[in-house]
Length: 400
Picture 1 (tube, rainbow, N blue to C red):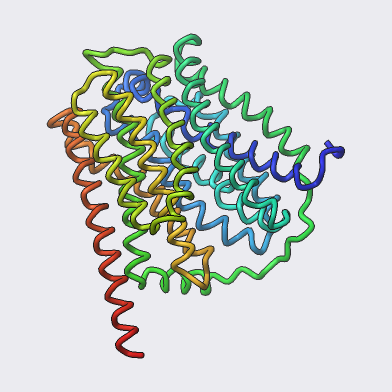
Picture 2: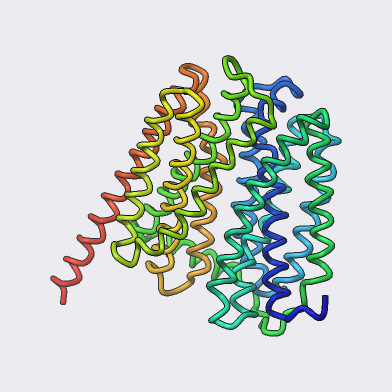
């Protein structure tokens, strides 16, 4: 391990940690119909298996990002990931569903150490010329972890007789990767501890929430990610039911459509060089809306095409909106991104409560209709964002 160059050890460790993190969060998504049958629960309760860890992750991001400034990134990264994996080993043993959801929430909270600390850690330990490529590898690792775990979870559940054995497979592979991370991750050389001051954090969050354009972006990304994740979750339930009755291994193949998002993330940067970021957000939402109408035909071909387009549209929105956050603030950028992440994951976790009544009354078409309303609200937020920006510019010119 010591023969590997110091910067490479950080990059590889962070990327492996990303794979471990998102594997343990998302592996259950194609198995929601299996959980419904196993625990004899409703579609809403089954979807909470995904909502709980995402909510935990949103809250954990705020806690660990601030705490690491005083304690150190590597210690928290290793400690949080280790606790998250212990919970992964315990999950298949739990037969009480409320307790299962509580463990999933805690799992998401502790595993949030990776998305909270990865980019700051790389930024501190790598040369500036290395950073863009390193962050690119990290983002790609997020996708690899999310897609591979969904595929492996679906296939393992089908061939190893149940979700519990699939959970052991994911946890076992994750533990092997964690040992590699533990041996590979070097101590930080450039970390400078700063005293943790809760008052300063709360003050920074309050200042950001007073800015209308930031709040609009936060609401927009919450709606967009909530639409993206929960549309996928309900699609798994629909495909597991009549008339499709697809097994979990076949359902999990639907998540290969997420590869479309990897391509769009790369194209988003090129688009932003020629056009504004907010126009990129509008384009991404528009693609998601078109995909939504395509999926209303409710056959496998239109669903596959629709999910590819939804992935392309969402990751386009995400890339542009996160860049806008960075450009919109000059002070306390970390807390601004922390709030972005909180709304991002909270939207995904709470979106199921909005969509469930539509599913109960109108089924799949109800889900599509409800997500159109959410996406329409996103378009409205972009219009308001531009109007507020124009008004602020006009007012500043008038005062000068």
